Image 1 (cartoon, rainbow, N blue to C red):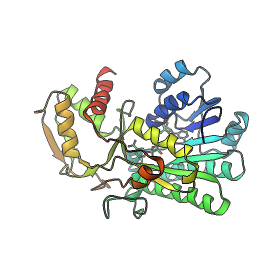
Image 2 (image 1 turned 180 degrees about the vertical axis):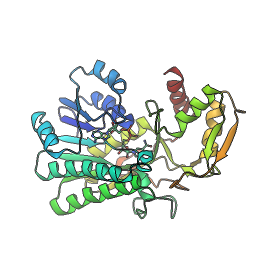
Image 3 (image 1 turned 30 degrees about the vertical axis):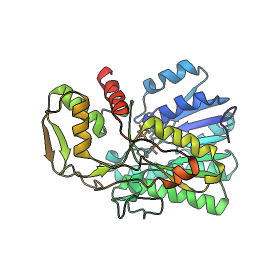
Length: 319
Ligand SMILES: NC(=O)c1ccc[n+]([C@@H]2O[C@H](COP(=O)([O-])OP(=O)(O)OC[C@H]3O[C@@H](n4cnc5c(N)ncnc54)[C@H](O)[C@@H]3O)[C@@H](O)[C@H]2O)c1
């Protein structure tokens, strides 16, 4: 399956991963490319390069959970393929848990409905490794139990169950990608920032880097453009429909080691690091099992490299 000539919608397209997906989709020559984003965290500037290279890009500021509104959009724009990346992020779920659960599940359900009623042809839904909770075994393959810790993680796991139930009950043309931890340019560095932008900002401010807990908690990081390649590949491979595919590197790195590597790349290896109380709901260990993606998609993302870490750091420094 190729995306050339297709009419494509990306929810959350003004966000971190979504905007990189838009950049990549442009290279695939779609006939029509539409972003739906309510700009909760999305930014116009993330789409600036895309607007330049694809002047026909349509950016619609709307709530993607609104089924009636989304039906109108997909009908008006003759959308065939939806990449569903809109999300309210984890830290928000620690403050407004009920709203985050309701929003994240509702957004996914909307596009399941539109697939069920034939308003769209294919749904590629974006899950999260957070749904697994802390590793019960490693590597964590797609059969690992979903044992969400935070309400965000529960909302992601629940949304996946909704998508899979529509696959089984209504045979919708859908697939789920389950990315592990992300990094790369454009990751939000204000409220709800991830660890990489936090390290950069602390170094710039000359303040100690604060690590939650002992820092031995591990994550499997994948660079955002590698994730995006995986998402496109999942669409192209029709044989993976109705499945969940992990997107990670198959390598784990502790928060301590990631911070240490970053400080070395930034040329400040002796920058002070302090440890604070553990964050509620922080998973202890994450390592992706990526055999399915390797075998079925033929991809093998490298994880954190000096080059992609430097590109990411440089982006924050130049911002
Ligand atoms: N960033 C990570 O480390 C990571 C890891 C695994 C999975 N994921 C998943 O990848 C996807 C994209 O995440 P991201 O990191 O790019 O997040 P992001 O917050 O940068 O992007 C999400 C976008 O969704 C938009 N949005 C939120 N609510 C909306 C609504 N009701 N209607 C329309 N738009 C709405 C936001 O404004 C934002 O632009 C999500 O499904 C997320 O769960 C992210």
